[in-house]
Image 1 (cartoon, rainbow, N blue to C red):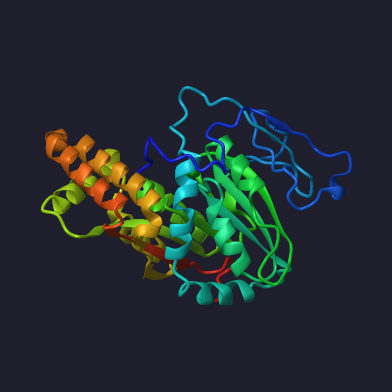
Image 2: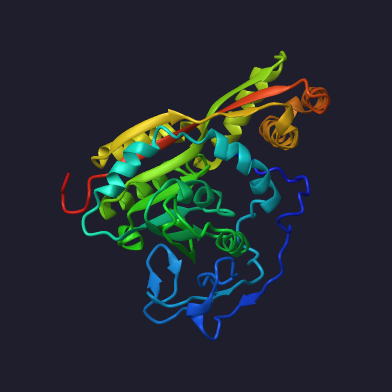
Length: 350
C-alpha cells in the first residue's frame, strides 16, 4: 500500500515521538500491564544477543529496555503513524477469519508447547498483534520486527496483554532488516505474521521469507497484500487508467506489488507448504471517509508519479472524487488477499 504523505491528525498517536529511553524498573517482576517497558532496540550490541538477520535482542528471560534514536540519513522513510492508525479499523474488518481455524489447529497440535512464539514482520504500530492475539488461545510471546524504532516503540506500548482465554501475552522488539531473515532468526517460532508487507518486497525477498519459514518449520499468516483491483462507485472514465498507473508504480524497482501473493504462494509451495488464499478487501463508505480521502490522495499521487502526463487530468479527477467522498457519495472496494502457508513442521512431522 502507499504511504500518504499527508494524513489526518487523530491525536491518539503522536507524529514524531522524541528519542527516549525506557529503563528497566528496579523490580522487573512488578511491571504492570500497560507499562511502557519493551524490548531493547537500540544501537549497542549485547554480547551473544544478536540473531543473524533479525537485529539485536535482549537476553532470554530478561526484562528488556528500549533506547530509541534519531534515524540515520540512510534509513528508509518511515510510515506515518497516523496513516497506520487511520487504516487499522479497515484492516481489522478486512482480514480473513476463514484462515484462522486451520491456523488454530496447527498451533494446537504443536508438540510440547505451553505457549506460542509469534514473529510479526514489518510490524508497524502493531495492528496485527492487536487483531490476532485476542483471537488465539494460550500464552503468546510476540517478537515484533521493524526497521523503524519509533514504530517499534508504538507497537510494544500498545500491544495486547491477554489472549482469547485470558492467557498472558508478552512482547519484545527487534530492529532489523527482514529482507535478510534467516531460519536462525526464527528459531523457536510457532508462527510468522505480517500485514501489508508482501507487496513491498522483491521476488528474492519473498523467496528468502519462504525459505526462512520453511527452515524454521513454522506457518505464516500474511495478510492484506494488494491485489491490484479497485472498484469505485460511482464509476469514472479515468478509474482504470489511474489503477493501471498505480499498479505500475507498485512494481517499480523490482517490487512485486499486486503480483506478490502469487509469487509468495509459489515460493511457499516450492518449500513444501500447503498454501491457502482468501480475499480481504477494504470496503469503504461514508463511515470511512477520512481513510478514503487519504487513500485516494496516495493512490492518485502514486499514479501521477508513475505517469506524469496524467497530472492535469488526475488533478481534476482527484478533486471530483474528494468532493464525492466529503458528500458521502463515494464508495470504494480496495481488494487485498490474505495468505496462510502451513509449512512442514521441523523434523518432517505432519
